[in-house]
Image (tube, rainbow, N blue to C red; front, side, top):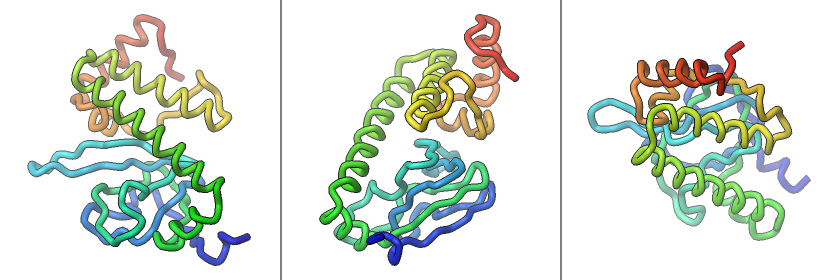
Length: 189
């Protein structure tokens, strides 16, 4: 009930940006449905997808809640999505009075740090097939945490988006998926 006056819902079409790098960071968002990518543009025009987020995930916690700033990432809907937004200063005030919200935000931040560490290891030391397999295992773990099937995964992102996330080319991602199918580690519907 304390949240309702501060929360604004927003619907995004597939491929619509919630915000872009460099824009003022005025809100903290929670994804209520759909999937979004979080990416950063490189100087040469390429992009690195930092993470994929879905229902229950926060967006915008990476910046200080105490001072204004600009987004360091672009958040774009992969599928049709819905998000709730709360002004950053209101979110900070809610965290001070709502221990459950504080716990959830810290839990999410810790998970995100863990995924970032795994991503760093993956980019530096794993083969393409290991990167793709690890990505699928991460999606499986996140599906289980949301109460969904661990083995029947939906991949709303394109292979190009997976490549941008894993630091691979589109062709290499396609070959890695083919290799995992040949080894009977995955089955495609």
